[in-house]
Length: 87
Image 1 (tube, rainbow, N blue to C red):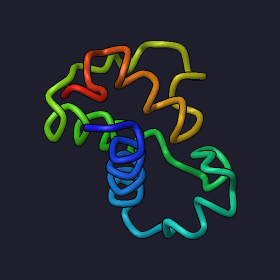
Image 2 (image 1 turned 30 degrees about the vertical axis):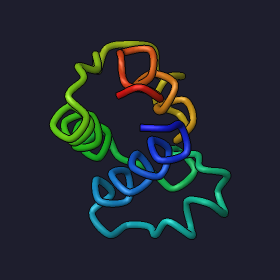
Image 3 (image 1 turned 180 degrees about the horizontal axis):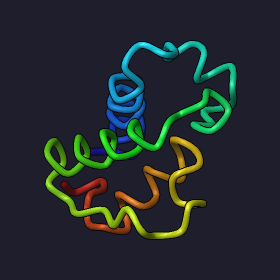
Image 4 (image 1 turned 90 degrees about the vertical axis):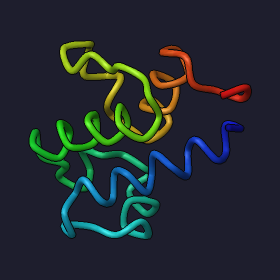
């Protein structure tokens, strides 16, 4: 999976985890900042679970909050966990 596809996948999973509280467009307007769209702690757990199920990587929910601030920081965490261009 290339980085663009990975980022798009994480964006889609984040919107789904938000349970209708924002759209992909609203997230884009917010600079892809999850906190800017009031992403809840439950949404974060849903996102982590979805990434683990869909991409087959373990993400530690206890890792620093900065790793879950934006779509790009989540994508970087996923790549560091083993999913990237050759996955």
